[in-house]
Image 1 (spheres, rainbow, N blue to C red):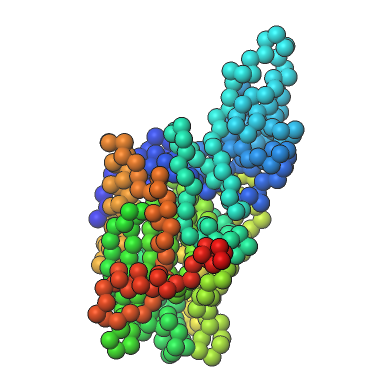
Image 2: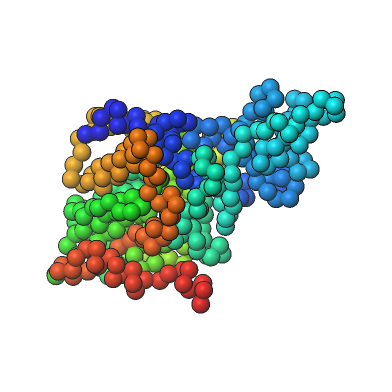
Length: 436
């Protein structure tokens, strides 16, 4: 059981908290590049409990600043983004993307002290449609994340955002809890409904897998396994990558190139950033007769974005409308009656409360990956706080670059890690293909 003290350590991410300090060692996804335009409207960002404002200047450079003007604390969100900087509308002080004050128009020239004033600014990097921010204190920022899905050719990469209104950890734990797929998402589907040659059919035949789990240099990994055909085992591999990335089985390991980041906006709101290789094998989506699997849409419709702190990428199906649950569909064609994988996950994870009370859990053998991941996070946060030990993968993000989730079938006699490595050796690798 997770204690209350441990739950607080795991879930609180604001400035000065152990987990917040851990996450600030890494580059954090901030927003999509498309959300910022040259001299366009500033964007409110809430990241790790800090209210920030982002803007793109005349030359296309991105700045992410504390939302308060350092003069008198006026909100820079209302600022004028013009001519290479963001100008506070209160007194006209102007700041560039690095936070330097470049104009003080309400001060006589002989009293100007702009060189002594800076808005708090975080370092920013932009790559393939995503803006990253480094919120740590190191003079030299670490390398950017290097997961395989992030480095695919941009024209072959799908990247999108969705918001979940609960703590980051319970959202992420859904991605590393593989047995729930056979219930929450497909519990109404019988094995006879699935193509008998489809690789994923075994999770409908046996809905109670066993597990191999281990810690890795970048986080944790698991293999859920079930009997397949005689003498063979069906594996579903997944990974947790520090500090909040999940690689989950969503097709064959041979080409399932994806990554999903659960970025804490604050303690009770989370933004997910999903990368997926567009040339991967499509996920299971139809019955053996070609009919769509009921209410298993992967596309999540979102509300129009609004400029408030939590107004971006909110699903249409949400807690306010009970995720548009259809009870008749639940009785007849669907396990949940909720349409869509993301809304189904949201209903159960948001329904746990803004921050789940883990002291009330009764954990089972099926939760071993979750327990191992929590322990990995706790150990890393404590080591940083008590010893200054750098968390896994900060300076060597490439250590997770070859990690991949997905399913495969292997002989019973073969070691699970050997089966994983052998399949990776035969897998499609987008970066290698792009270089050819």
